[in-house]
Image (cartoon, rainbow, N blue to C red; front, side, top):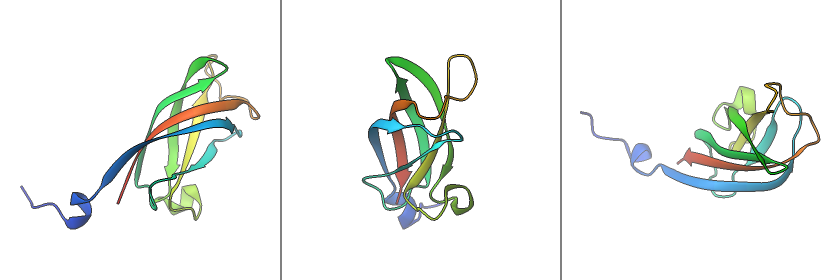
Length: 101
């Protein structure tokens, strides 16, 4: 087993909550309040009007082509109960697990 690099040793993971976010069709962009660069991200919970919905990460800041030029950015897409994407303009609360240096 190889010795972990310094970057691997100091990797941090944080849970961040974003409340009253207005959803945009195609995914909503969020920025970490703690990490300068987001390399990994997972959706822990998405709530809309008291209902828990499925959400998934489309891109993180380390993937510049997909997330733009925001290194601490995360793009999240949300699925409504009918299986389609949540309508734009809906207000959601999102809880994310974020990892980065």
